[in-house]
Figure 1 (cartoon, rainbow, N blue to C red):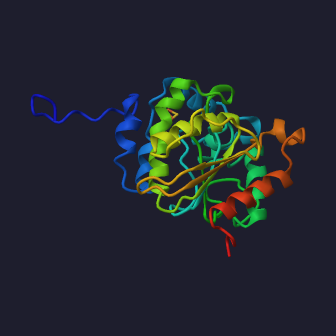
Figure 2: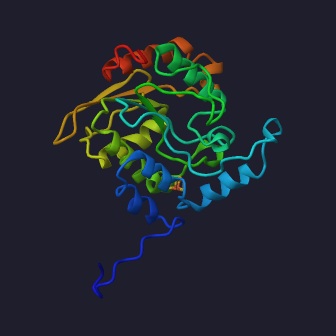
Figure 3: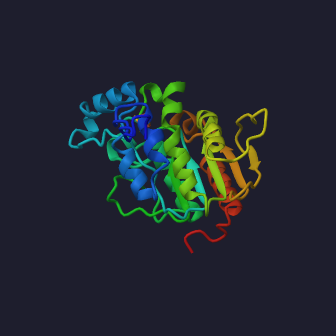
Length: 263
Ligand code: SF4
């Protein structure tokens, strides 16, 4: 209520306050996802996702691109989260599902399957029958950015969506595997906003770096692991091999208590 006694008007989907207003009010992940996909709070990213959607690559000319915010994917009681940075223009922005439809996702889902966290090694579209076991794949920015680089303002504007998602996952969440330095830089403030105490100075990203966030209040201890991003630049050069990602996913699954994922 304002001083006149009237209830303030909720922000529209194209206002920067939209994520902050709606995300924290959602009672479950389905409601959160339904609100998220209406979000238009970052004008540059809305323009870009729709621009790309109107200009499919030749290989995808028969596709109707999703061209909206891409929600997280995986069960609501997942003890493990895998966090990237943002959807790819012709991957998640095309298919409407995280990491689905691009080379990074092909690499990631094959590794998740090898560890027993996914029902199949391939991900092609939202209706492909893929299931994740005990893991939710998400990102701190939900719209595809130009050059895969969201601005600090865009990361800040989108932060409430992931903070709310982590809050809804919190009763079961025990570990997070972060893919890439940009994801690491974007995620740590979200974890702080979601209520976990962060060490100062914040630890630098590295492949295999592990950060333990202590339990506080109703939050249990959270293990955060860093991995190189499965980008083509990393996988083609051998900086990140399939075995390296499988090894870290296995470690993360163990920290999350998923000793026999999918079993
Ligand atoms: Fe909304 Fe996030 Fe997309 Fe910005 S990046 S328009 S806050 S969903």
